Amino acid sequence: MQNVDPTLPLRLQEIVDLFQNLPEEEKRELLIAYSDRSSECAPKEGETYTLSDVRKDQECTDSVGVFLKADSENRLLFRMSLGAHVQTLTKAMASILCQGLAGSTAEEVMAVPSSFVPKIVGTELVRQRSQTVYYILARMKSACRQLVAERRRAECVGSTS
Amino acid sequence: MKTYSHPEALVETAWLTDHLQDPGIRIVESNEDVLLYDTGHIPGAVHIDWRADLNDPVIRDYIAPEKFAALCRKNGIDETTTCIFYGDKSNWWACYALWAFRLYGHERVKILNGGRDKWIREGRPLVREKPSYPETTYPVPTARHDKEIRAFYEEVRAFLTTGGPLIDVRSPGEFTGELLHMPEYPQEGALRGGHIPGAKSVPWKAAVREDGTFRSAEELSRIYEESCGLSSDRESIVYCRIGERSSHTWFVLTYLLGHKKVRNYDGSWTEWGNKVGAPIQRP
Image (cartoon, rainbow over all chains, first blue to last red; front, side):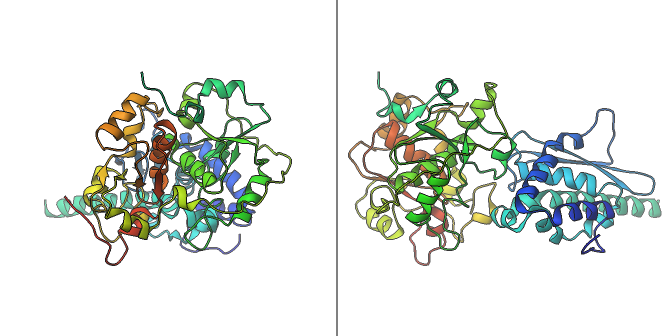
């Protein structure tokens, strides 16, 4: 492993390592491969979620849904629904982050620094499309914040009743 | 029945399917989505990115004529090649690339009606293989035709005094000043909202149908000529945020309605809305 960032979940660090030393062209090819697999992170029929947040934001060309499922140890499973016009980079990041953040806690996801993104995407694409590449991580963190807030609210209610 | 002034500037998807192998044409994909071409493109199409290939990497301007010639050479385009542009977002960037090609004097240009979405919707083939063409000897353009089809800030200021028609093709929210940027692009905003005094609001989308193809000549004439007072010999200027949506309207006015004096103010709202002292109108 190279340039390990202690704040990155192990799975995500492995993906970053995979990308980091690739030449720009091969980075693009790997991003396309992740984008191609983005449908695999779509919500599954019969699966129930602790939290879901589907919306079309100003930063995105189509609607993006974040679905969270927390297990008994508060480890998370992410699913994402992506509208037909969501851009390729956004799809790739959704696929990477669903895989890389699986099994993390909400607190761990909220602590993920965005500095790993240029290592995956390459500085050229980050420069051109800065909002697109950071969007999915921002949405996942937002869902985690919501989840933590709801958990705290539930704890407060529990302690006062 | 009114017809397009330059119907030859449009090709239909069926026609292109039958002419993919024509040696005299080069199909050029230009998109908003930077990786879209890599996910699949029309067989034989080359990719020209509006920012990486056509814009100067440092100064806000287009590449030098030498770089334009090099871009054409490496994509197998010579001065006799007919470039057929298509892309995502109802051909915004395709029209922008076409307009940029015209800046360098490349006149043989066309748009694929309906763009990438229509091609895909009709189940036509896409490939991932990137084509390679023999390098050409495209000559370095001796001049850039900014004067004819491009407007600069000072020229727009001067144009205001003539009362000439200025068309704002942004969304209604951007025109009224309610939005400081286009919904999807918060990083490309301006410090002030509103529109250039006297500009008429005709969002770019007015020119296309639901399927992304251009409206009929009669419909376009009603929108731009009857309602806005534009006409073939009258000067007009179009603008948006950075010049891509207005390139689309520029194409409509220039090629489909045959207006001879249309200029695209590509500095657009990201220049005007950030400029100290620029006059702004809000409803």
